[in-house]
Amino acid sequence: MKSLFVAGNWKSNKTTQEANEWIGALQVTGNMPFGQENVTIVLCVPFTILAVLKWAIETNKLPFHLAAQNVSKFSEGAYTGEVSARQIRELAQWVIIGHSERRKYFGETDEDLALKVEKAKEASLQVIYCVPDEKTSIPKGVDVVAYEPVWAIGTGKTDTPENANAVCGEIKKRIGEVKIIYGGSVTDENVASFVKEPFIDGVLPGGASLDPTKFHRLLLAAYGA
Ligand code: PGA
Image (cartoon, rainbow, N blue to C red; front, side):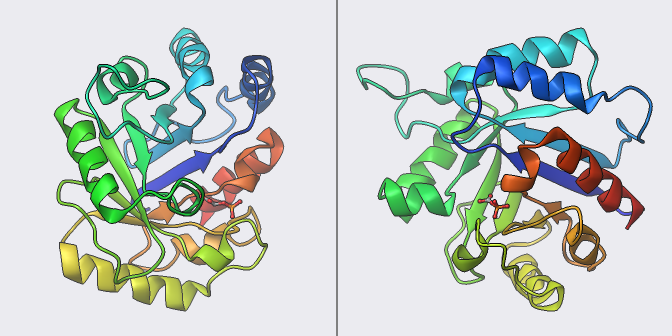
């Protein structure tokens, strides 16, 4: 099996209690091939949940990594309301930068995002960098690129696996050998068609990661592809 990267994006959902219930319900004990070297599963959760999930993952030895969904473009200091890369690194190994919802609702520009990548890398965070197409600029040093067409996010409409593969291939040609994943209405029913494609290294499900049963099914389908 080729290597597989699955990042579940909870967006602005769940309390700490609901996060613990999600972990409990997933029952990740030996009933799926978790923890393989070539499989990486990242839970991208709100800042308020990181500490709770870090504890649950370490205590129960679960093969999940954690990601924040945003990072300050500044270092620590007088930036009220911001969370710095160094603060995130205490709790998570990964961060999503450039999600289209950050670009759309919070006006984040390519310049802001490049600064965020710089801060993340200085703090040794690994970066999942989202782009809506093959033309958008991608800062140097990102670890995973997520191709997410805006019209496919949360709409139930996906890109075709063939076109998503072509876009991921274009991005690889442009920036070299980084992992490229597809996001936009990925579910347990369509995930296999994406990860079967040669240039698609994994997926970034949003809605389908919120329900532990659906996420479990999605992982099984991705493994089986
Ligand atoms: P969706 O979200 O799977 O709910 O479309 C994907 C994303 O925005 O990362």
